[in-house]
Image 1 (cartoon, rainbow, N blue to C red):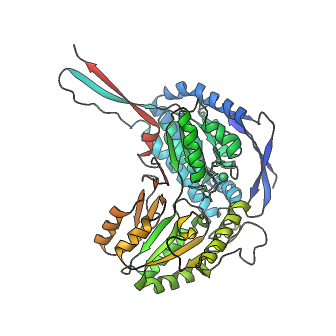
Image 2: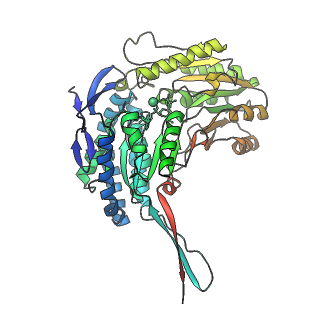
Image 3: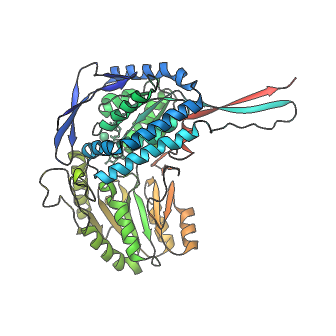
Length: 478
Ligand code: NAI
Ligand code: MG
C-alpha cells in the first residue's frame, strides 16, 4: 500500500503547513507508517480560523432546510462509502473492521439526526401580558473549535460537528495526531457535495502546537474538547482568556455494579463488553466491576471464561479487539498493571502483550481482583483492557464506592429488582446510567459527565444547546 500524503483542509483547499513540516502516522497493528500529515502550528490555525470566520455569515444565513439537506446528503455519502471509511479508520486507530464500520454508520446517523434538527430547533414565545410580544431567537455561536481524541476519530467529529453545523456555526477541527485520516476523508465528501468554503476546516498536528493555539484563538467562539482531564483543564484556562464556552468530555472510571439477584452469565457478558470494547479505550468503559459478595464467584468464573475467548489481533483481520493506539498508550497501560500488582491486587488474567504478537501495540484482556476502592487502579483512568474487581456487601456500600472517584461519566447496574435499580439510578453521580445493558442508548441520548468527567452534554437534542445562544426579543405594543 502506498503511503498517504495528507494536508490541512482550509477554505475548501488542500494546503500544507506554512512551516512545510510533517509528521508520521502509524498503523498500531503493524507499527508501519501509513501516512505523512501536515504538522500544523499557530500559523495554520490562523488561516483556518479566518476561513471559518469568513464562512460564518454565509452559512448562518443559509436556509435551515438547505443546511439540513447538505448534512443529510453527507450522511448518505458516508453510508455509501462506509467500507472505505472503515478501512481507513481501522488502519489508523487499530479498531477491528466491523467495529470501525459501526462507528462510521453511527457518524452518518449523527449527520442525519442533526440534519433533522436544523429546521426544528425552535425558540419560544413568552407571555408578558397584552402590552408586549416576547420571543426568543436561537442563534449560532460563530466559529466552533473541535479538538478530538483518537479513540473514536470520525465518530466524535460527527457527534460535535454535525450539531454545530446544523445550527449555523462553522467549524475548525483538530484531529488527534494519532488518527488524522478520516477527518480529511470527510472533507473530500463535503467538497464533492458543495459545502461552502470555510464551513468545515481541518488542521492536523500535535496538541501543543496546533490544539493549544486553536483553543486560545480570539476568533473561536466555542470549544468542544474530548480527552484527558489534564488537557481539559488547559482548554478551560485558554477559553477563560476570551470568556468562551467550552464543552468538556474528560473520561471516567465508570462502575458496573452487579447485585446478587442478577444473572451471573449476563453480568459477565456485559462486563466483557464494558471493559474490552475498543481495547478499553473508551471514555465510558466500565473499568471497575463492583460485585456483591454472594454472586462474586459465579460472575468471576463466567467472566474469566469469556475473557479468555476474546480474540486479540490486527484490525484488518477483524478480531474482537485490536491493539492499543500507540506505544505511549501501551506503556501507560502496562505501567498501571504493575502499579496494581504493587498495590496488592491479584492478577487473574492477562497483564501483558499476548505471547503470539511480536509487533503492534497489543494488550491482553486483563482482570485484577482484590482491588481496594482507594488503590490507584481503582481511581485513575487506565484506558486499556484492564478491569479492577471490587467486592461489596450492601447497596449503600456499592453506591459509596461507585461515587468515590473524581469522575462521573457513566454507570452500569445489573439487578432484577426495579426498586433497587431506580434507587441506584438516583444515587449515582454520573451523566448516564445503564440498567441491565451496558452502553444502552444511542445517538439520540444525551451524554456527558458529572464531576471531573466534564460538563456540557453531547448527543441527542441536548447537544444543540451547546451550539446556540438565546436572544430574547421583547416588544412593547403601542
Ligand atoms: P490528550 O488529552 O492529550 O489528547 C486529546 C486531544 O487533545 C488530541 O487531539 C491532542 O492533540 C489534543 N491536545 C493535547 N494537548 C493539547 C493542548 N495543550 N491544547 C490543546 N489540545 C491539546 O489525551 P492523550 O494524551 O492522547 O491520552 C492520555 C489519556 O487521556 C488517556 O490515557 C485517557 O486516559 C485520556 N483520554 C480520554 C479520552 C476520552 O474519550 N475522554 C480520549 C483520549 C484520551
Ligand atoms: Mg496528551
